[in-house]
Length: 256
Ligand SMILES: [Zn+2]
Image 1 (cartoon, rainbow, N blue to C red):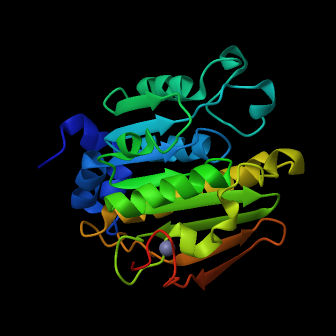
Image 2 (cartoon, rainbow, N blue to C red):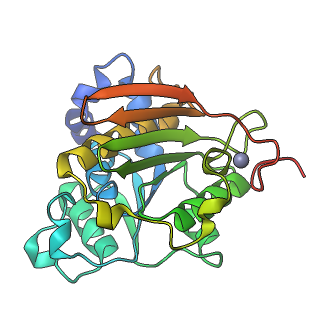
Image 3 (tube, rainbow, N blue to C red):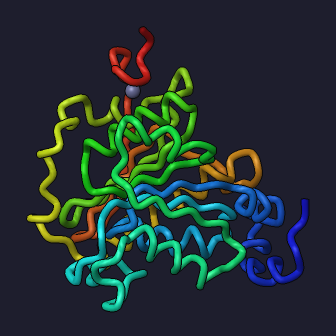
């Protein structure tokens, strides 16, 4: 498997990196990444996933563009207000790199559609705005054996972690947050406010961690760092990394 001359040129700065190289770029080209949420996290993350040359993207968001999104959701413009975010995001990808195969799902994930929506993914990057969807996505990833990169923001705190809960020694997202967050009404981000550049920092970090997952087995950058929680403090700024423990009683990944 080799890349066409125009692709070699487009990704020349990746290919010269010893940590990525030609083999790594081919792996990115062959990869299917599912992005859950095309908002504050998903929008900048999408830009860097597409720029990295991910060959297939599935974009999921049930929301429409609001004028208050434009302060941080970098792929949208005033003309998009009122339109489905997933559709506008797919159009952005097609303009940016017509070689990318993109699928838009303008729907709210639920028990009935989540498995099909995530099917065939090499990694799911979750940047959605509610815990109920995050837990639904995590449980589906564990069941289907799909790695999950989670990126979340609250004011000036960012959390980025990759999970492989389907592997016997690895925690899942539910091990990390527990069962209390399945309720739909525990989300506060909209009322809290968020600085656009902070969302961008967490989003691009999430994209970087998802790229590590894709590159596992193909390039030196491919150490997926499963089970490591990276905590970003945007005010100081600082970064701390913690190990997440596997919960043997976990409803999702624990042994029955
Ligand atoms: Zn678990």
